[in-house]
Image (tube, rainbow, N blue to C red; front, side):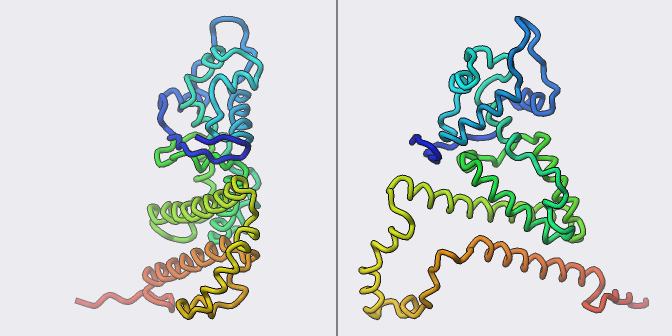
Length: 274
């Protein structure tokens, strides 16, 4: 694994790989609290927040029970009175950083489209704040309060789409998958700049002389005819892609509604008489 401030590293952690029952107890505050020994000097919240700070600063590979204990100025063994180990701590970290906003306005203007749009932007911002999230395989998440609160809020807003429940969930999954891909691309771009010392502009400028010769060779006529602003870095590819996905959902939702009402006119077809 590589290390360094803001580094992505090369490893992948897996959520839900610890004691599932114990993790759920801790997430839902139904776990056993330390009862033996002196009065606890720490709280589970302090431990989780310290672990998140370390991951944000130095990458997920830097998070260990020993490092967290040092951050809190305590002995490593004392942490085990609160959390079984790093696997469970990771799931607590995931739930902590994914707490949804309490402000209803942060989920758009009330329409299902604005809710999905706001969710996408908030998720992208989350990955920018905590790039280590991209190192975690969350295909089997532990469902804590943050995960369920977030899903509850989004589904409540997009219910008016009128889709079957599994399609509503699939719409959320689709948007999330798009955001994860975009976030990973942006993170890799920053990582490449950090590792090489070249900005994105400097990187492409270094290739420009050779590319100009290749484009005048006649081998790539379509590429050679592209507008000079095609590769303008100011173009927001994320926003463009997000709006096209939402446009597609608009068409799909409209078609489904017309199926239910029997056509664009909103009148259901009469049943044939027997």
